[in-house]
Amino acid sequence: MTFWTTLLIIHGLLAVALLGAITHQAVAVWMPARAKAGNFVTRFRAVPSTSYVAAIIVLYVVTFVMGAWIYTQYRFTARLALEQLRFFKTVGVFEMKEHVATIGLIVLPAYWAFWRQPLSEDYVGARKSVTLFLAIIVWANFLIGHIANNARGFGS
Amino acid sequence: MTASSKVAVFTIVFGVAFAAIYVICTEMNLPLVTYHPAIGEVDVLWVPERRGPAMYWYGWMLTSLIGALALAWLASVVPEQWVQRAIFFGCAAAVGYLIFYTVALFIYDRATVELEFLKSRPLAVAAALVAAAGISFFAPSRWQQRLWPGWVWLVPMGALTVLAYYLTPFFTR
Image (cartoon, rainbow over all chains, first blue to last red; front, side, top):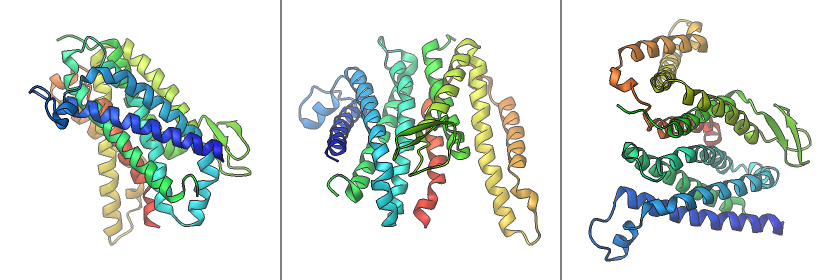
């Protein structure tokens, strides 16, 4: 059990890093700071968006692989307990998490293509949209993961 | 008007095709492999659960991956206009099917006589295909020239909506 708990904690930490990176990039792309960086919020918006691309892709893939691995354990331990406890909504949102994670993964190739250097003027709008879409996916999965873990996570 | 890069076309179509095939795979349960986590065994194609639950998610992804790679490769070798037209037609047909089938079931539920044909999925599909063909034919030509990059988030978002709908039994029992 220690092994799976360790994996789950690493998965959670990677998700936090991914969440920070994609949120930073999405904010910088949608609300770029026009004035010189001053307070915290302005500095948050002033980061160079392109520098996050590789990190986001690697973090997403590694987090996804770890999540897919932990899922095997969840399926015949935590989920069975959740069903016996009639926590069907929790099971349902976790089912949604697997779909959301898959959809995020398949958008990554296009995300990479739109952010390739030199940045193409043709894909300015697509870059913004796909980055926001990916940010929403990461946030949704992070929150769902939290809910599922709070219901029947490590230590329970 | 310059053409989109082959890399962009490949990746956009990959995302669109994967999302569409993935929805079909989950709805019709078409996994390439079945994993049995309790005993750590893998079977080819769909197999019922034995000694513990069966997991089809990995299999759905593999089925979708193969289909999406094939379609993305095909899209990168045919003219871009064809790809744009195909996706436009597919999306119009998908939306049309949802509208026709929903309206048909709505009428069926409220009709005072038995209208069994309204429950027919093939009929809704046929109507959607005809409507999509009409919309595609009359759509402005500038919509059909280049592959719209927005498909890569719009189609997956639609796929997520459909997938969420399939999961409503978890929230209504």
